Length: 421
Ligand SMILES: [Zn+2]
Image 1 (tube, rainbow, N blue to C red):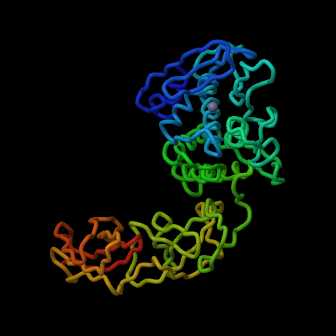
Image 2 (cartoon, helix red, strand yellow):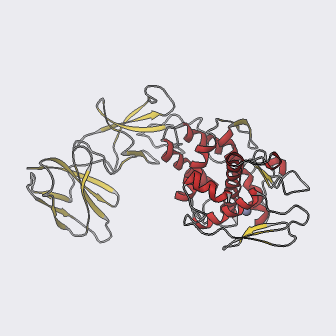
Image 3 (cartoon, rainbow, N blue to C red):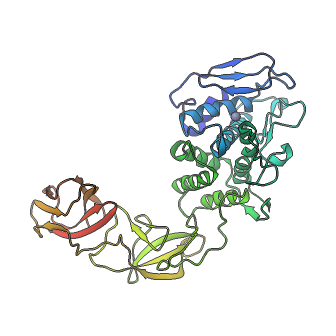
């Protein structure tokens, strides 16, 4: 069973449910369709076309079963478009895997980028991922052949051409001008990174009600997870979406200053963030992320001297200097999430302490509060929720030395430096 072998070999996934579900297929009489119907797939015997039993069509239907166990995308709207496209993409990957993994007679070798090319009698294929326009499907969001009629079934099987072409471009690269008049130039990432990115996005991030813009964002996130924030793979994912008319390009918007409000920031790729204290880089973007306006948010693990002011340097991804170059944007900033030592309503005492500290917080009922104790290496050595206005915290297990007690209330951290004797 090629679909099973493909996902087991390439993604370590066991059947469509990742739990070795049986793959049951029924055939039916003379009919031009195939479908996943929730428990098994049904393969039509063909009426005006050949039987719908080609490898790509069968894999397409099993991919619908996998969608039921992962992202649960429906069969309407943009979610339905993504659902259909995922099925075509996994069909293409399965077909390519079969071409490479098994001795196949030349007559059965199929073009992975065509869906149903051995089945249709009246046209070259059901769908072309390499050139959706060849089957009167769009290759650009809202572009030529984009279907905006009322028939959901036609909509999702037509407009899937956009994401299909995205995946093709991601694998193979390409350049041209799309139906929006935007010229694009996408470098290939080739199939193995591409299928890994999409698999991670689908199984970890995709949701049932998402649209294509979210698919863009979540595949970018998956590429960042797998290959790094400044990786070529991230750039290529963005470039390929731009090519099919989804989302912004990376070109333009390069002038970003942290201490100014910036709208429409494209933070997908260009920037990593370094917090700079005087001339020393003390933290990198592992603990600091850019927010939508002029905020840098420090996350768990951030550590610094109490009361320090910081500069945020914005770093361009695709530049030299160890892969990084500091841009001219170098501004001091103050943020509401900046660490503060003189908080008015949080007290930790005694300081220095021996075994325990008492933490007093002016709690109101809906506050969500937790406390962390962080050592000088930035490691969290203690963590707990706080539910009372005064709590005794046992830190007897810690070695002598300096610690930051960080209290995070409603996602806003405040820090107090303590010394253990
Ligand atoms: Zn389908």
